[in-house]
Each structure stands twice: as C-alpha cells, then as structure tokens.
Length: 103
Image 1 (cartoon, rainbow, N blue to C red):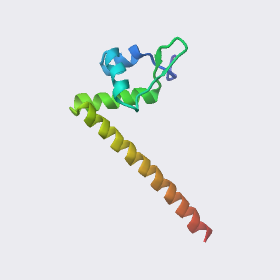
Image 2: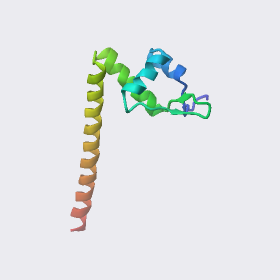
Image 3: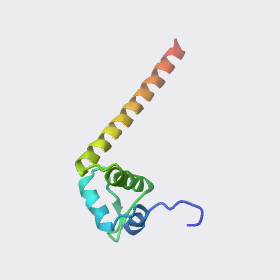
Image 4: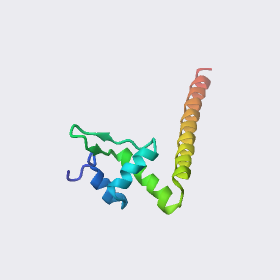
C-alpha cells in the first residue's frame, strides 16, 4: 500500500519493527491478555495497528524499563485502569455539563 496505512501486519513485519523474533511475540501472547492478534483463514496471525502498539508497549516495558513479565503485566493493568477512570470522569463531566445547561 503506497501512502495508506496497512490494515494488518504479519508476525514477521511486527517482529522486524520491534526488533524481537516471532517466537518472542508468540510467547508474549501467552503472557499478556491484552495481546491477542486475530488469525486469518490460513491460521496466520494478523496484527492491527492497535496490536502493534501493544507489542511496542510490552517491548518498551521489558527492554527499556527493565520490568519483569509480571511487573509489565501490572503496569499495563494500572495504565488500563487509569484510562478507564479517565473515560468515566469525562462521561460524568459531560453529564453534569448537560444537567447544568438544562437548569
């Protein structure tokens, strides 16, 4: 695809992008719930942009930040919980703003 982003990436492409062997990515799938690329009809893994971002996040935590697998799992869980809390607060703010405007 020329200037357009690809919709799916192979495990080899993702592996090259993050500098880790394909078997490492398959291992991470077992260790991290957040990483679960779909498989195509041929049974090959296909990674979306979101999957690639998760792989890069895991690589960063393990390699750059020197987290253990369990530590990286906990860090990802904390980040996800914070994001969910932010979403809840945004919804609450929107609701309160609408309520105020109605009064």
